[in-house]
Image 1 (cartoon, rainbow, N blue to C red):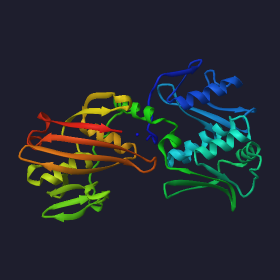
Image 2 (cartoon, rainbow, N blue to C red):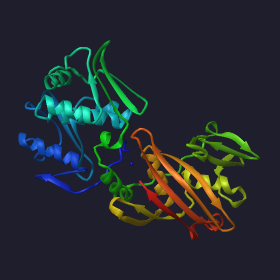
Image 3 (cartoon, helix red, strand yellow):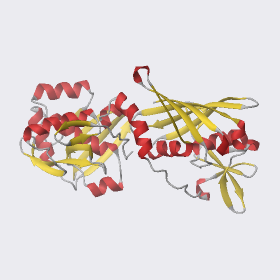
Image 4 (cartoon, rainbow, N blue to C red):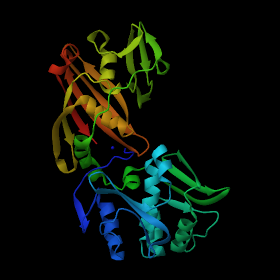
Length: 352
């Protein structure tokens, strides 16, 4: 929950003063330490025993925490312009494979994780040598095409018309990011504390379609059922469009509370369910929580379960199709929130 990629700030110190964002990266750094390659290392370094023809890159965030280690395949300017966690996965995964001792271990890892690697140019009969040949051949100016189909990604790297390497793999968060389910779940709250909520963006008419009366809507999409939608609603007044938030348009206002990104100064009281029967309770501005989800490539879908004279109940599903995960948030709040938003809280149970 990116980042381009959702990152946690943990405190796993595996070698010297190198601190990593998850255990997988810590294990990789530990293996690199055998090559005297990790002490105070930032940036790029050629390690002949692993990848003699291409540098290994180690990247840290502003806190000095390592959030990526891998074979440097991709041009960083291109990655910044077209951010995707797939770039980081490919770089890290090739390093993981090349750190394994031999053919059998590499083949077993690929089979277990349902990853398939092929090449029209290089033989993979001898896996380790074939992978090193591919790494040596890949240049930063090559073309890369990333597609997804049937819950799998395929990334094809071409030099002209020659397919240097094609790697296909499941759309699975643990595989792509390297975070276990437990690590990903525990990363949410620390990441929220560090997150800076952006200013509300202006609404442009070209993104809106007429709905009814003087109302307009945006992001017309649903999830699983037509009653769980990502739609948000706007009222046109004096030539400007404002998010609807009134008991006169109750359903539309409930959807707006979560989907629109608008900030009415409402706080959320969150109880997050964690593995092992644990819970994490915290209070946070609701708009900060929804912005955080959206900035990590989640689409928010809201459904109303029921509402009576006083209380409204429903569900928000934050879906990240790129990484193959979702957060489910069950909410309740008092109808008085529409008249006095800063005097009411939204209660949320979060299942990550």
